Image (cartoon, rainbow, N blue to C red):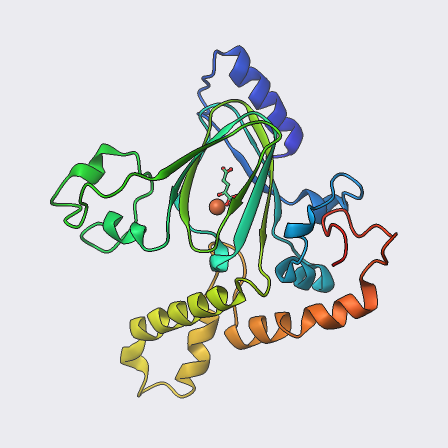
Length: 261
Ligand SMILES: O=C(O)CCC(=O)C(=O)O
Ligand SMILES: [Fe+2]
């Protein structure tokens, strides 16, 4: 749906007392920086500026992990941990969000009898003992209300669910650097093991079996990940790139890169 149609929908949704035959729609993962070279719209706080993931995609000039989210009261993001176990940050331009955070490992208690994680951690179905044999009255999630103008940092591997309490527009980035690249590496290795287990019955009969497993790894709806290619390209990249392009002390970086470190 083009942005202009979404904005018309949103206005009608508000005029219709927050209901519409089309439901409550959330505009997610709009790549404003990638699609419009949004020069000067915002600069990054220094703590979030070491960002190997986006530097890598900028260099290839094909994609990024910088998003705008916007939606009316009642829109929400289901329970998840961020892509590749990256960090994320989120700043509210307007509106408020309620975040429900689960420290790493606590999601295990929420798995259903098939090993799946819930879509919505507020659903009463979690109390059904047959479906959720492991669900004990575990510690409640960490609940954070993010006000307009406030920024939230999501650590690597923390599962979370997010609800817009008002009509809300936010900027959200995923990023990876030396502080969490090991988490990314372990996550990708785990995913590869899971794929290998799934297709293990063809191991003996299929020539080149190993090389077929890595292309089966993919981010949620995004990019095919080739473990070797992805990490080996990202890792040596920042130093080379910064030597060539890091801004001097009085120069501005790209708006989303913040000040060079
Ligand atoms: O704001 C949202 O709806 C989701 C944000 C999120 O999951 C994130 O920034 O990691
Ligand atoms: Fe997230």
